[in-house]
Every structure is written in structure tokens, then in C-alpha cells.
Length: 343
Image (spheres, rainbow, N blue to C red):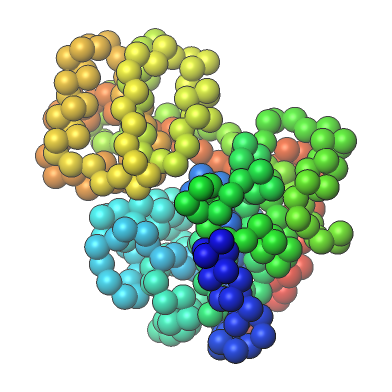
């Protein structure tokens, strides 16, 4: 009740303009949630980047991503280089900087300052995607998209510390659009309508549905031997909020002989890499598999056994809409709200 009261008073102060709210001078897209971890913010941020890069209006414009850079060691505003480490900039920003070389990626806990910095210099940003900024009330985004996990709907969850809600469920109504993530590959119209009735949404509020799709494993280190991908045995290493979808996907191809679970955003150490080497001795024919985010953090470990490097791969993940029609509708919605780029 105390946490609920604090949240309610905070939102009241911003809603009534008691506390100052700023806007960037270029379009901004906020991708956020009201749950602690596990809703798929990074895959959906990347999905939006792909849609912007594929559009006629934004393909050759200066697109930027601004993230807090959770658990990073650097301070203040930082531009993330293409080979930037997860240790210095956070695993999600490092991952996006690596995957999108034409996009400017930056980190700053102060999102207002971060947006101003991104507008400076020789190539000022013309659109900014805000990663995990729905609770950052000091900055009002042009478009706010909130994600809800299909497997943990907010209407059946509770506020911290008894549940995983970091914000009031009623805040869903403040979003410009809601995406139900991690859905099964197929939902019929009746079930989609039931979700609309369950969630606290406005009648006219857009609700979209996405699922998780995985692509072929890729090496964490250049020394990896691709032959190990074809092993039937696998050691799975994860440090994310929920690895159940990945386990389900890999179980179709591999026998998972060992699982090594770490806390979300775990910083891997030389000791952890030694544990992987021990797992190889116990399972000499097994492949080592991890997540895309974990791969970023593992690359920061200075000393990694050569046998671990040879066997260690990650599985790229993407967020995809359930139907092409829904993807087209979302793209049209996104581009219409972003408008025409400023020169």
C-alpha cells in the first residue's frame, strides 16, 4: 500500500504539472513496460529500428537510441562505440550498437540531458528511440509503447515486493499503444478480444500481438568451431529474467544436459568461465549455448579458456508480429505518429 501511494502521488504531481515535464525537439519513441524485466524491451526496440531503417522517410536519417545503460560502469552521457563493452555501457546498448552500425546509440540516466546531447554535434539526431523510459516522467515522448508479457499479464500480477509490477496497472491507459509480447505463434480473434477486455485499456487504444522468434546460433568468440552447433547435447547458460522460451526452443533440437542460471544482468567473471570449462569436462561432446545479452557480457571477460571459446554460441532473438497485416498496421501507426523528419 505504501509503494502504491508513492507511485500514485508521483504520477499525480506530473499529470497536474506540479513537476516539470520536458519534450525533445525531435520525435521520440518510448519502449517501456510496467513490469520488472522479461517483457522483451530490447527485441522490440530493435524491431522499431528495423522498421524505421526500412521506411522511405527515415532510412537515411540520423536515428538514435537512448538507454539508461543499466549496471554500466561509465557515468553521465556516453556515446556507445560499435565495439563497446557491456561492462562500460550496459549489455543492451552494446548489443544494439554492434547490430545497427548506422544508428547512434547513447546512454544517460538523465534522459532530458541525453536527448539534448544527441541533438548536438555535426550529425544531430532526427529521431530518438527511448529504451525503457516509460517511468521517466520528466520527459514526455511523442509516442509511448508499453509491453505486457503474455505469460504474466498485469491484471493478474501485484506491485513490488509481492509481485513483479514496478508501476500501477492503470498506467497502461497512458500508453499510446500496448503490445502483448511472447504470445504463441497463433491467436484467434476471440482470444485477442478477451485480452483486450482483461487489460486496463482505453476503448480506442491500439493493442498489438507479437511472438518470439529465434534465428540460427552465432559464435560468441571468433575462435568458435561451428561443428559443435550440430551436437545433440547442450549446456545452457543464462543470466536473464526468464529463459523459459529459449529453453523450449532449444529443447526441440538438443538434449539440455546441464543448466547454469545466473541473475538478470549478471556480470560474468573468470571464475564463471572456469565453471564452463568444468562443464565441458563433464560433457565433452556438448555445445555451450547462451543468450544474445549474455554473449555481450561474456566478451568482457579477459581470460576465457580456448575450449570454451570453441564451443560457446548464442541464439539471436527477434520480436515478430503474429500476422503480416498486424505488422503493416503497426508500421503505419508508427510512421504516421513520427511524421516528416526535420532537416
